[in-house]
Length: 141
Image (cartoon, rainbow, N blue to C red; front, top):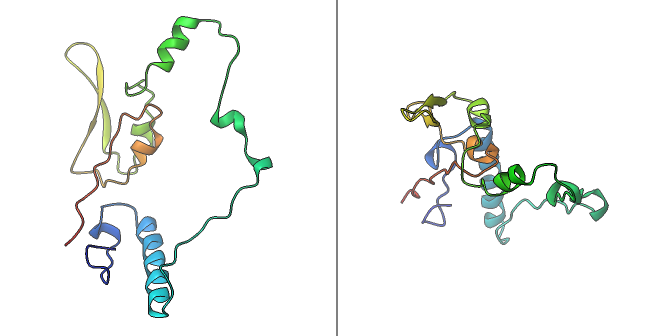
């Protein structure tokens, strides 16, 4: 929805992105509008709950009892927010808008070509350290 509850915006009108995301948002908007016209409360897609037995806790809470090298373990734990140069962002970008470049000091940085970036957020979703941030577009008035 927009600032006007009777006007819905989806797709590139909200944020540049993939066609499939716009189609999904259109489907949700259509269901919501249909529900409102029928007099129902706002409707949202509800995902079924996953049975507890299917949840693999090892994935969400990995704990290792012994470490061969405690120094590298500590460095990994303290690296949130610092790029590890894994290259996932560069690989996952559907528009090839991210590239790695060397800095004058001998380091590296990943740079975004704003002419190619569509704001899909794949880089932010793939980054294991949370380096990338996607700024939301202002709502359409």
